[in-house]
Amino acid sequence: MRRRIPLGLLLVLCLVAAGPAGGGGIGAKKQAVDSKIGELQARIDRAKERERVLTGEISAVTSEIRVLQGDVESAQTQLSKLEAVLAVHEARLYELNALYTAQTQRLLFLQKEYSLAVDRLSRRVVQLYRSDTPDAMAVVLGAKSLSDAIDQIEYMGTVGRQDDRIATKVKRAKIEMRETRDRTRRTRAKVAATTKVIADRTSEQRSVRDRLVASRDQLAAARSLKNEALGAVRSDKADYLHEVEALQAQSAALAEKIRAAQSTGPAPVTPSSSSGSGFVWPVNGVLTSGFGWRWGRMHEGIDIAAPSGSPVVAAASGTVIYAGWMGGYGNLVIIDHGGGLATAYGHQSSVAVGVGQVVMQGQTIGYSDCTGHCFGPHLHFEVRVNGSPVDPLGYL
Image (tube, rainbow, N blue to C red; front, side):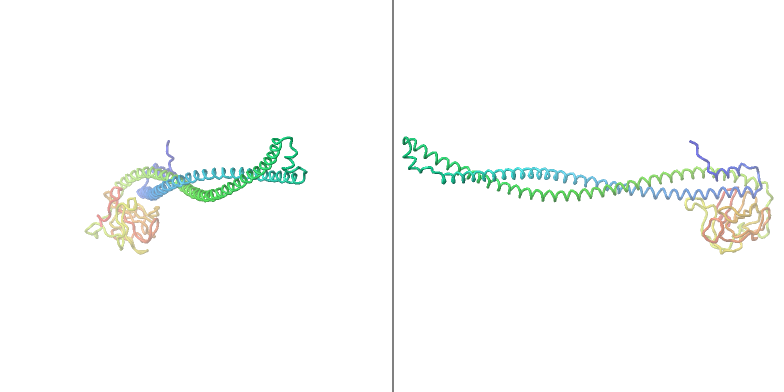
C-alpha cells in the first residue's frame, strides 16, 4: 500500500523541482529542508521516548495482570472449596429440617393417640362404676359352671389390663418421640449455626474474588488502551522516518545546488587582516554546545552564548548568499568564502548585510539574540564544505 506524501514534504519537493535560482534562493531551500528534518527528528525522538515509556508501562501492567490472575485463581479455588462445604451443610440442614418436621408430626399423632387411649380407659372405668355389673362373687354364683365363671372373671381382667397397657405404651412412645425431636432440634441448631458461618465466609471470599477480577479487568482495559496508543505512536514514528528519509535526499540535492552556485559565484575578497588560523570568532561569548549528535539528531554547528544585541561578525571574507528569516534558524546570514566553503550565522535579532554584498573578515553582519528555535540568546555558527556541515572548531 503506497504511503501518503505529507503536505510539508510535497511543498519542499515542489520547491526543489522549480527552476534554477540564485545562491540565496538555493540556500534558503536547503535550510528550509534541513529545518524540516530537524523538526521531524525531534518528533521521531519524542515518538521513540513515548514508545519506550508505553512499552515499559505495558510490561508493568502485564506483570500486574499476571499477579492478579494468580490471585484470582487462588481466590476461586478457595471459593470453590467453601461452596462445596456449604453445599454439604445446606443439604444436611435440609435433611434435619425434614426430619424435625416428620418427628413433630409423629409426636402430634402420638399425643392424639395417647389422649384417645386415656379417654377410652376413663370411659371404661366410669362405665364399670355406673353399671350394675355384679362383682366376682356374683359372677361365680350366677355362672352355669365353674369354668364359665373363671372365663368371665379372666375376661374382665384382661380388658382392663389391655386398656392400661395401650395407654402406657402410647405414653412411652410419646415421651421418646419428644426426646428424639428435641435432639433433632439441637442438632439442627448447631448445623444451622455452622452453615451460617460457612455461608458468611463464602460470601466474603466471593467478594474478594470479584474485587480481584474487577482489578484485573480494569488493568486489562488500560493495557488495551496503551497498546492502541503504542500502535499509533509506532505508526507516527514510521511516517516521520519515511518523511525524514525523503527530506534527507532532498537536502543532499540542495547541497549539490549550493555547491554549484558557489562554483559559479564571484571570487571571495582576501583581506590583508586575515588571521593566522584563517577564521575569527564570529561573536564574543562562551561555547555552550559543540558539533555532533545531540538529543537524537545531528547538531550541525556550535552554539556561542552572547548577550542580546552583541555584534556578530564575518568569520572570514566572502560574499553574502543569504540574509533573512529561515525557519528554526531565525534571522540567518550565509557567507560564501569560495572553494566550496561557506559559513552560517543563526538566531540573530537582525541582519546588517544583504544578499550579494561582499564582506570583510571581522565586519559586523548582524546582532545576536534568540530568534527561531532556541532557548536563550546565543549565536548558532556553522561551517559547510561543499554544502555538508563540518565541525567549526577546526576553523576557529
